[in-house]
Every structure is written in structure tokens, then in C-alpha cells.
Image (cartoon, rainbow over all chains, first blue to last red; front, side, top):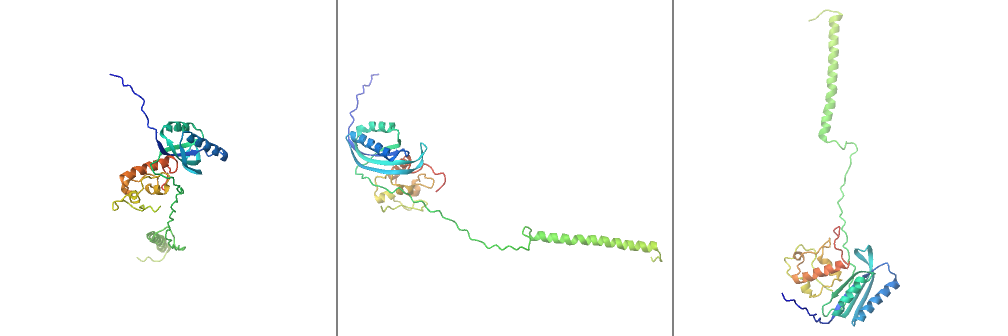
Length: 189
Length: 83
């Protein structure tokens, strides 16, 4: 197997439009933030490119926590840079301490920077209104018993004393008869 | 911007036109949150093409824009409750 001798490729160096978005640590003070931005701009200008647009958004709330922070300073740069500068840039952004996130994008030709409104309106919550029923409570009638149960109870209550009365009446009649028989008088059979 | 998007639509079978093709948007910016929110449901998941009626070329650009916005903390990856 013959060894393949690889010669270094000639990389074409071309100027392209790039977009750089950064999120900085929110614990920094205003003066320190300006220092950092100047350092980054100097870094970009060293390469021989131009910065066409720069936009500092300020403090903005994050959609999720990054390194236990809920806010961050956002900046956006549109710059024309040579493509051979990219490895240096990415190395610099990787090492930088105060950066939380960074992103580099290649832009299509004929793109102009536009500022968008970032506030997204939330839909108002619909509050359901349930129709109110007029409930009239009768205080005299019992609430927890149904009609059938009431009837059964009345029957039972009425039936019970009758038997008792009949039994007591029968006893009296028998006693009277015994008295007649034993007490005296003519037997009438 | 004057962009036409469909809302309150169960599926886009009747409408066979892509929203981006009619408005002639070649580049979908990931910072443009107002247009991106129509293609994302309550849980912030990307809606399939069947419901929005977007053509395949623009759907691929859309997904890359939404994923970039998620990475830069402009849109969350997932919402716990449907909002």
C-alpha cells in the first residue's frame, strides 16, 4: 500500500458577512460591560474586517437558566470578516470568561440588519362563566331523605303502636273474664 | 410587515400555499419571534407541515431558525404547562 502524501490545501480566503450574537454575565457593572465590548470590537478590527452594525440590547430575561443566571446582556454584531479568521475568533470566544453564550452565523448576500420587537404578546386567558342556578332551600323538609324512605318510616311508626295497644287491650279483656269466672256470679256459658 | 399567516386552523389541506412563498421571504431570521410563534404550539414544540401548510424548503429553514432561537434563550426548549 503506497502512502498517500497529503499536501496542505490552499484555502480560499474570502470576505463574508457574519453575524455574532453574545450573551454576557449580568453581574457586571456598566463600566465593565463597556470595557468588554471594546475588547471584542478591537479583536474584530484586528483581522482586517469591518463592523457594519452593532446593537446592544441591554439586560434581557432568559427563557431558561444558563449557569444559574436568569438574565443577561445581549449584543449583536454584523461584520465583514475574512474566512481565515474564524478559528481565532472561535478560540477567543471559547476562552473568554464573562461570556455565557455565543453564536456565529454566516449571512446570505444582500442581508441588512433589522431590529425586531422582541416582546411577544401573551394571549389573554379566557375566564369561563358558569350559569348560576337558583337553588331554593326548604328548611322545613328534611334534605337527606328521599320521599320513599319517608313513607316507609311513617308506616312503621304508625303500625308499631297499634300492635302494642291491641296487646294491652286483649290482656284487660282476659283479666275481666277471669274475674267474672272466679269472683262470683252465675256462670253464663 | 403585512405577513399572512393562518391561525385557528386544524389542518391546511384546503390551502395549498406556503405562507413564506406568498410573502417571498427567503431568509427567516431567528430574532423574528413574532413570525416564529405561529409555527410553534403551546408546549413550544415545532408544528408539523400538515397543520401549517408550509412547503418543504421553507420548513427546513424554519426549523433551523427555531433551533437557533432556542440555543440563544429567546424561546424555551419545552414549556411545562400548555400556554
